[in-house]
Length: 480
Ligand code: GLN
Image 1: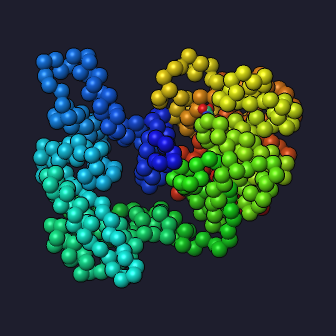
Image 2 (image 1 turned 90 degrees about the vertical axis):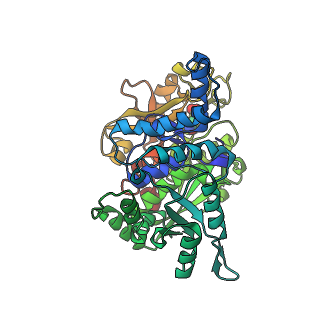
Image 3 (image 1 turned 120 degrees about the vertical axis):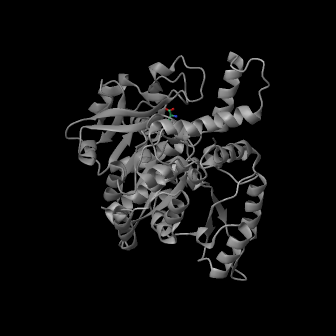
């Protein structure tokens, strides 16, 4: 998935590289998901083709229906064994997309194979608002419902994305033309903050409708935590700070979605509005770095792959290190902090990461030992959650308030241990490592208000009610 087109790649605890929607599910449900929660057509096709090659279907014609649809249904039904009560299957894209057809056919079949009250179809549609004539258009919803019905699925509930409240007569019209009851037309209005949406949907009666139709008894939900959060958001002070993200995917905010959400969580925690400025690393150079970063009180250099923009990242890190601007480096951001330190403090002018210069004399970042023999590049990085031991009396300890953390990873390269001693001598302290001490996970600089960089991705575990400590610390330092 190109982060430019598709947004960030989200990583689960068990190391699945998934669509960014899974990040939203985790943030909203406050539950960790697993690789089983990501069903792609690629996975399905690969499994079916492998079975065919193995001879599992000998003598049979292998086709999209039933083999692909059966494989999709198997994944859906496999949740039965996990003890959950309700499975929510989201089919991405738009009704009628060629990519989604076999998924839609599979959920249609699930509907007829199950008890009637056990399956519910919720269709999410868009109600465009024409500001010139101040009206909402229901036609696209009518059309997509018609399209869905042509595939044999009758939606039970319509969740309508809308910019304004849906007038009563529009609700009635949608219900009548789309063949649902009026209470089943749920408005999902654009909220000023994403985290207000659950309470809004509760008020709209979505859960009531779902429970009624699935014949589940609805107890009064305990929404206390959401309510507190929503109060906090509504009453946030009018203080503002700007945090800059110096990366290469600056045209699409979704490329750094979890980082941006983490900064929002940290803002709520610190009672301040965090404005985010995406800065194109490719445009940053020695001459303009001051100007480019001028309105930022803190800087993040995020993860990434490939050499585009790395020199700008290194210039940025030099500037924030020397000028004592709060800084958080993530993954490639940490690796570049190590390269910057080696070049400018240790004066190893050719220091680099092996990712960008395989034959440089000072590969301060090098390929991980376990990665050396790997030739297949899909899904083979060091992925998912690993423990990290934090050094006593370090900034990391002060931030995390513990000496053992578990964070998620996605990388192939690592800090080269050959340089530990001289780097530490000159002030780039190693404050977090793998339990055996071999893999450097966190580096920091003491004589600086906030200079910390990690090999893992703290953004994947940040939740609105449990903000990730490294972001809370960055925002706090930036406020100072
Ligand atoms: N490209 C670097 C590596 O593979 C960093 C990865 C990242 O930032 N996620 O190690």
